[in-house]
Length: 306
Ligand code: NAP
Image (cartoon, rainbow, N blue to C red; front, top):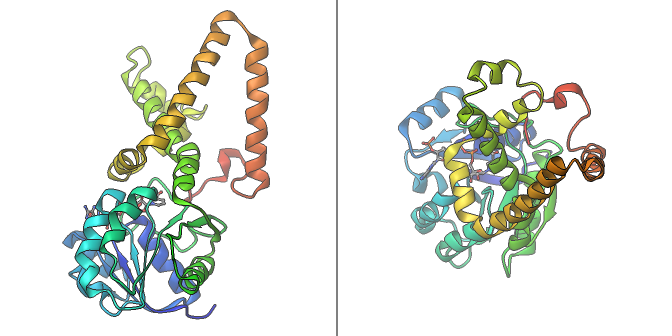
């Protein structure tokens, strides 16, 4: 794979940025990758594990001369970071992000993007429940989707270049409108996370079943909820605060369906339950057929999650 950008700057050095760094290096996609994280502890860790060719003490220093700047911080912090780096952005450079919500990031970041700099929001649909600079690995994006969410008037050449970077990191790339992205992700990721958080909270509150029983017998379904519910609290707080409408719409529908199932259980309506579970089983089959999960026991999960 050949070099796509001369210099890439990663702002925020957690799971997503560190995986990008290792994937960029694996394929030789950039001449130099600079990095910045707000805490000295993260910067020190990054330096000690060789994460980034150069770790800078300020975000402004990291973006100076960069052809591509990637904002890899929680969604709620994107606007402030964009404001901070704006004066140092090189004319003709591209700014992108990896935030899990798109409309609010566009609203927070766009006002700070100077004339002559391209802004192309993006979201890789890949992650694990781990966070921080040591959590990343080069294979995270292999065969996962990355959604590009170009804003009005985005430069086609800049989009093509960013697409080539994600493809070089192993991802499949699609383009999507911001509002549709936020609705799709509310269904596929945000509401499921909230349900997992709730289920783990319920188990914790239920005094008639001890914590040790929950842990010991968790393989029967609960374990996957605990994996999802171990996800980073800051990231997920920001996701729900910024994708409010779409998440509430999906949760409203979820509650209605849950009440219907609850009623079927109470009234002994086995037909309703059977038909419902038959329909949902087909969705699982579709995910496996699309290559987005495996049929293996334990869902074939090693490191990578959803
Ligand atoms: P992470 O591992 O927790 O890393 C977050 C990074 O952002 C850290 O370097 C942290 O700095 C920095 N940061 C946190 N709060 C900040 C603030 N207020 N101002 C400036 N910097 C701040 O997170 P991640 O999983 O890589 O997620 C990063 C972004 O990717 C988020 O927007 C998230 O929505 C998105 N995303 C995540 C996943 C996933 O599954 N994890 C998947 C797709 C997209 P310190 O280390 O110095 O605290």
